Length: 569
Image 1 (cartoon, rainbow, N blue to C red):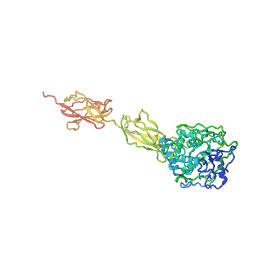
Image 2: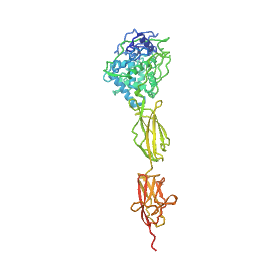
Image 3: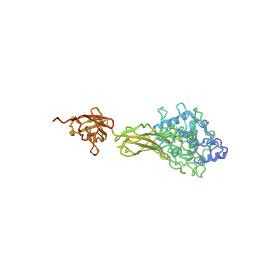
Image 4: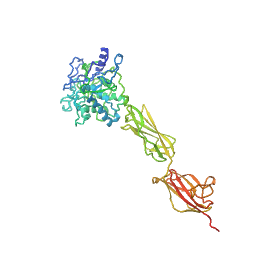
């Protein structure tokens, strides 16, 4: 809960003046004011001579830390900029690191749009409890001794009367922050989790506390791949610009590399800093009348009010902080890991897209938005647009449609419907807003077809030489047993042996300009799949012939034609 301002600010610093300036800037925010178990002095005087708290004290005298990682300090080029992944500072106790990564994985499954990075939990855990006092936890992840903050009795902190009857903090008078992530009991009552499956929601268990902290940071549908949302999330945890700066520094440090170390061997601060200090006039501590801000409900947006000089108790369960009138001079907050940002779009299994004119495509266009690690990117806006020379459209008639990627990063366009114009067209998917990525998929519209054609009557077709066939011929085309409308049909007259009949030498149709032709094209079935064949002339040569009906799609029907010679006189 309370700050323990370390003098070990940046490894390799060559000037104690630089370190002192950074300490002053951090402590100017009163974030949050005193070592655990100690109240800030009413006048804001420097109490840096206080003895270092016992790390394993059951009364929770191990404070959270404002030590900064070994990053480069602006204006001090002699400071080392190295961020070795195997340095002592980058070591995180195995159980604690496992809890952070488990929380990230769990939330990725339940709230993928949050994109919570475990490094953010590690940064907060480092600041709040020194990674559970360097990983002093048992096999189940519970701290060997409770980590408790000071009594919130209004003496240098917000006044919060007991809400749990001492169940979590062993204080039946006032509340205290509890556990490696420092939840106050009233906040834990809302956000507490059982992440290790032991049937208990225990704020002293790193798995339970890490998951609860992750869910709290994700509240209000936050997307933590967005830089400003990280700031809002951290400030909701503790509304202090100095706290934000410190967490941000560790977040950047862990993004550049971290490794597992045995439980109980994590690095702890070596020198306690001043309990309080002030760089602005006036009292350094909130008045006893300070009251807590509302605790957010699950799914709501935690309070992220702009910093002001007035004390407040943030919804994250942290004590009230007096924020500085000027922002402290700190390292520029780093951007979130590029790996968690939208990085591209890919085909998510869309196969060959082919449909008959007027029919709906059997499969739709499916794409997948991905981050820098190739994982699905959820809640990303996608626009699908149809282009090309066909009259294809989405169901409903539109040629453009919007969607949002699902938990696995996929988005599916509305159903595609082929128009009457055959040929290829394109569907373009564009994902993202400020930075966009696109993918083009080609689809094909084929002509309407039939797999069967039948005659609607069975009357024999007979005509005298030189006359017309009196009975008309009507056929019906079907596809998979259903009516096949708009199907192209060709009618051809052949000899009984299946050979072509020369024009004018047998039964024929009337062609362009009144000519006699043996083949007609451009015929089409109507809405009921029916087609009436034009008038057939018997011609001047007696014999047996075939009327062959062929549909687009390969259906064939042969109908016998008989031309009789006139009777002998």
